[in-house]
Image: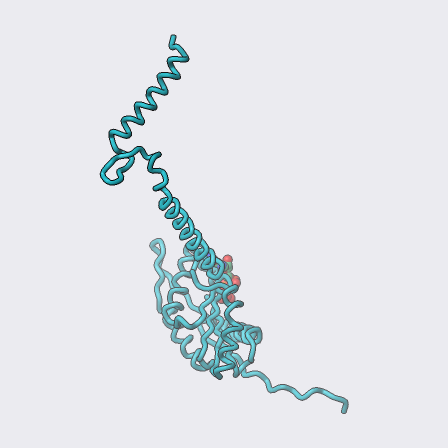
Length: 245
Ligand SMILES: Nc1nc2c(ncn2[C@@H]2O[C@H](COP(=O)(O)OP(=O)(O)OP(=O)(O)O)[C@@H](O)[C@H]2O)c(=O)[nH]1
């Protein structure tokens, strides 16, 4: 039976042997060509701790950037979301009013998108959404705001463009989309879009009015048979206040 006292003693012998061997084997490190156990050199670990802190800091910065991106973008298409729109529209309007240039809103919506989901499945619907987003991105400028406004609805804000210029541009995009064949899981399909256009200063001078008018024009385009772009009607001149006869 092992003597507990010996056992303890044995352990101690082992650890001092290990210490000796570590001193001899020089594995922990060397200073001026002489080798010392790591614990003697422990003060040298300070830069390593600093590096660890630096790495943690970089990870936090990266995480913050990711979170910031997530808060302002749609997870499927990576286009901007409505939150980004709400944050940037007041700035865009202030700039346009100060500099005296137009700003046009285009509300675009995929036609009969429900049928795509119903006939080919939600995954196929997502592929269609991604393709449309890609085409919109390719055909707009970095300075434009491209936003996934709802399920299959996109809002494009075009600073510096009149409604008529935006209508032409959107009509060209509409034709590109109609001519695009989308492939998914052995299927080939194509979709069309409809869009409504309204702009500052022709149709209104605030974001809410332009959104409503672009949406009304989109409704007209849908009612007119889809696969088309409709321009909002110019705003009616302010009526004089109605007073007593
Ligand atoms: N796959 C997919 N479908 C979505 C997503 N968001 C919304 N939808 C679908 O979009 C469809 C929209 O259908 P509706 O509002 O009836 O419009 P529509 O079929 O496009 O018809 P019109 O707009 O009148 O031409 C619904 O079936 C939604 O489920 C999404 O992220 N992915």
